[in-house]
Image (cartoon, rainbow, N blue to C red; front, side, top):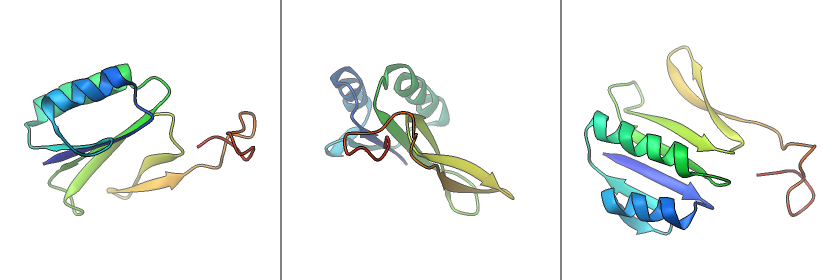
Length: 105
């Protein structure tokens, strides 16, 4: 099983994801594919994400039972902590304030 969650994704990428996966909510896609197909989908996400961001999560033989990777501009980045994948939450970019003036993301 794999899941792709997108934010601010361009229509071209959303259409490409809809070809392979079922869109169960706006920007949330799920499906069951091999590692090879998942890597192909991930490469398309990486190439087409533009100003948006995405996370791909899939079942894996890890202690948590899954693995994940992020793409695009995102304050939440995966980190390895003694073999366990966690999420580091980076502070806003002070040089690039978001629409509310407090930083991006």
